[in-house]
Amino acid sequence: MSMNESEKRVVDGTVWDEFCDALKAAGKIVQSEKAPKDPFNQAEGYRYLARLLRGGLEGFLEFRDPMFPQLRCGAHETIKLGADNPDNRYESATINPRYDYRISGSRGTVDYLGFSTIINKYASGGTMEVTGHIDARNMELGPDGCIDIIVSGTEKPGNWLPMGESSNSITVRQTFQDRVHEQRAELKIERINATGERPEPLTAKKLERGLQGAVRFVQGSATLFEGWAESFLPIMNQLPPADQAYCQSIGGDPNIFYFHSGWKLAEDEVLIIEAPEIPECQNWNFQLDNWWMESLDYRHHTIHVNKHTAHYESDGSVRVVISHSDPGVPNWIETAGHTMGTMCWRWIGADKHPELNSRVAKLADL
Image (cartoon, rainbow, N blue to C red; front, side, top):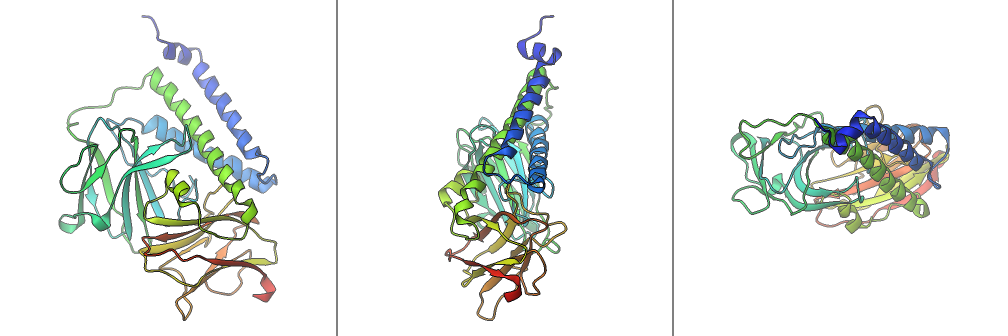
């Protein structure tokens, strides 16, 4: 029996060799000209690539069949990218506009629950365009908070999540104010009219495409966010509004207004960020990230604050203090061993988007 080209390339080891060579080439991103070259940040950079690889292999090799989609959590405590929100649970699934899908489950009590169809090009062009969106605030819920959403290219009655002609993925954001007491939504996705069908076995072509997609995801994502971090160098320790159109083009939530920048502090310095006005909003939060735009380790450090956890001043304003050691004031954000990195503030579902004030001070003066 003759072999096709993919089968030949798998059997002679070419597919694996090319995967390893491409992964090695991706390591050069960590050595980018403006990236920090000290051992600590370099070590985090290579760990970052390893984390992206884990996510890429899951996304492109294990969960890539749009005929049998599954919602998976692809960004979490140990896979991070793009200023991942510590208050979020991210889930995604592969889809194809040729099919219709149903998302069902229970609403839970999580503060914000949003669904988007997207064109995910992190592995090829660095963008993530939203093609349809719905969130729990404008959905009809069944008894006991039951959720039923139809995902399709043509409008359907009830809760409808639109797809575009090039949509290839669904993103679900669950945003908590209080992870301890809020209950997450429990969701599943299925292709409509798929009863009794089963996935086909692995083929050489699927393996080849999966490995190629995984390494392109590593290269594309790391290049995108390392370049974004470099763009913050001229505005270090300031926190102006980000380019909202750009944020949306790379996967931002339509309900969120973003502030992004970089930070750098000496051992005896603190960064003070003040929000003189907190708008009417569903939520807001601030987080500290490393150079590679990964959220810092929120499992063991307090590196973010939100609407629920923040201490408010008597006039309703908020002051956040970033420092290496405990300054003895509310809303302390730990640097967790870092001396520089990136940061993000979000207004979520806000009626307006007040700007923020930031300044560097000496710890002794605080």
